[in-house]
Length: 318
Image (cartoon, rainbow, N blue to C red):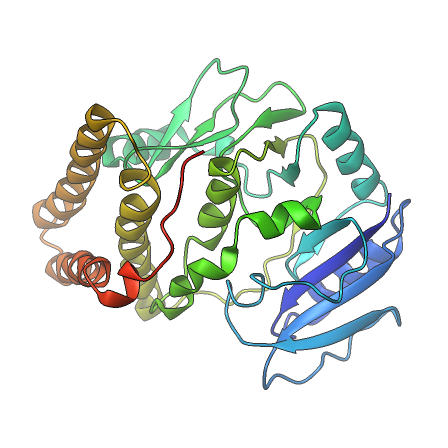
């Protein structure tokens, strides 16, 4: 199996980036090439294994992944963020599972939601943001009509079908990735706080009838190169989360749905989510948080009504 490892980075992950390069250098199936897509204006990192080469591209979580990959000459691409470490047989196992399951895309369960506490699980379910599913032998992650997602609470198998996942790592054919036209979703890089690019990418794969599987038996280590969030960044993250859910719901759930009844049900679901998220802040007398949530909802629907949004190619559910 020939594959190219592609990494998106700002070049600031330091030792964590070095651990990623070391992990690639030790694979039982070695990458034919390692291409690092670094944001314009950032200096090249000093960490190296002497095999990687760099390509400058426009900065952005989507912009640094929604590329044509003309530099890639292999059939498969291993997509990576810059803060991971994994065992030497990782790519070999991913490829084997991909073939055994007859799948198109495989991604490890980097952030194990199944380990959430019971209290967190109940609160997330009530809010409509997230839901645990019990005794599901088929699905790992699924998208909900609120724009959130549900997850398998007790995964027993090594792999499950999924509609979304974390995008820190995944393996697929180059031509399959190009089918989803991720460049149509560059609107996400204009958000005040970028969130949701992984959910959009994977759900577009699902809507395009690509078979996505989540790998639960992995030994990935997410080294988390990100800095600790300040109170202001936490506020902007809340704003970005609510803004994204509104746009995602409209673009990927409401518009592609052909059934009138399911469209109406999706409207009920998003209204429940929005009313709950506003009411909880009112009941807790957290007015500054309420204002942030209201601004996110208002701005999201202003964008949905804009000419820029209307020019985005329509998402089709095949």
